[in-house]
Amino acid sequence: MSLHSLKTNARVIRAVFEMALKQYVTDLFIIFTVLIQPLIVALLALWMLHDKKADDGIYVVVGSGMSGLWSSLLFMGGNSITVERWLGTLETIIGAPTEISVIAFGKNLANVVQSLASMVLCYIVAASLFSYNLMWNSPFCLP
Amino acid sequence: MSNAIEVVNLRRVYKTSIGVFKRRIKEVVAVEGISFEVRPGELFGLLGPNGAGKTTTVKMLTTLLIPSAGHAEVLGYDVVKQASALRSRIGFIFGGERGLYWRLSGYDNLRYFASLYHVDPEVSKKRIPYLLELVGLNDRAQEKVEGYSRGMKQRLHVARTLIHDPDLLFLDEPTIGLDPVGARDLRLIVRNLQAEKKTILLTTHYMFEADALCQRIGVINHGKMIALDTPEALKRYVQDLSVIELEVFGISAETIENLRGLPSVTTVSVEDHEQVQALQVHSPRGSEAVQDVMNCLNGLKIGKVIVREPTLEDAYIRLVGGQNEPAFTQN
Image 1 (cartoon, rainbow over the protein chains, first blue to last red):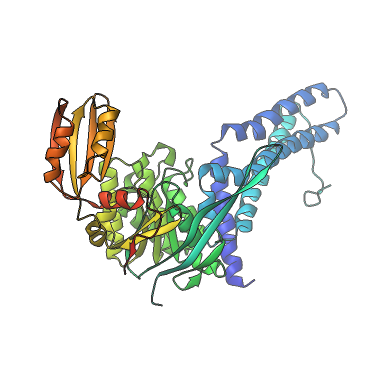
Image 2 (tube, chains in turn blue, green):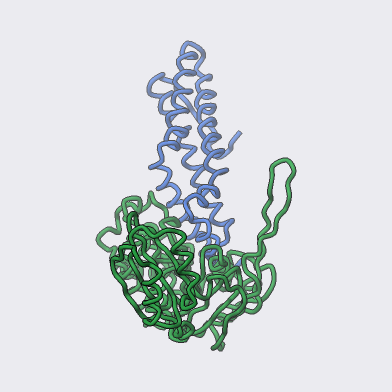
């Protein structure tokens, strides 16, 4: 792959990523799966664990975040091509000179980023409402 | 390159299944070996009834469907083997409101499609306002598409398909469902595009639109090309006919059958408008046949009677109305 096509594909991925995020933030179902549902799970779990040792909080944050991430990726990622068909845009993107895999990559990247919002929200709730002091010792080394 | 589009014996068969537990595969021939060519800079019309194979043909030429047999070249590119090279040179619209991202603004839609078509960001920054101006959407560009009227969405489709400045456009029923003013605006845009020497393949159900815009017209029925010529030549195909239009109150089925049985009458069509029936009678004897028709309708209240020259619509109805074999082909 040449440098030119790498730059072109990177530009397309960025455009798809921005477009997908703009669409997600206006979708109430996505707001529910990413923010409301993990928040309910986190609040319940943190309340049940509030007199336990401090380390348990991290499991709640990661667990709730993972539930948001999973729900979001399951519905949005799995449905992304079907949604394009419903919108009538599938033909338009298939007929464009960009490879469909590049478009799918950009869309799934946006899915992952907006799903991670669940984890961030759960962390804020744990830290602010339940006074958990959560630390991520190795942020670049995922478990 | 001599022709912008060259189609030779193009065929497309769809496979569909019937039944749930005991499935049976059924083959449907959508396009049955059609051949035609479109010259560079030409506005070519493709007409035909619903299910005739127009959209399937356009989808094959725009690389969205692979032909079952035959060969097609667009701008010198093979639509199967050189699909990715061809895609950046063509634009297409499939009629209707769908095909846009409704939660995004008109501007964002164009910016997104500019990226998909690999338009340089500096170029698209200038081109998007130009196209929005061209289709008359510059005042509403930052609004979400979901708030647009149908006509505005259709015009945004035109801007979207021009974002990469294609040499050839496929417009599949672009004015479908538009009000008369919206349709006229869109036809004006199409006319301007033709003035820019863009090659256009247009499919439509509106005969007057095809007559006004197209330099040559191909008529498809049951997947076959049954006529291919200029609008004037197609109209000459029915020059031996005159059309008598009548408004009748409360005509019976028996009287309609009697009308059809008259030796001076070729075809009779009836449109029911509540209490009034609009009759359209085709006759080779022109105004002479009016007396025969009036005698047949004796005793019925008649609103108005008009005898007129045949139009492209009359030629079309004669071509697709029961004839599946090639009527005539002339280049």
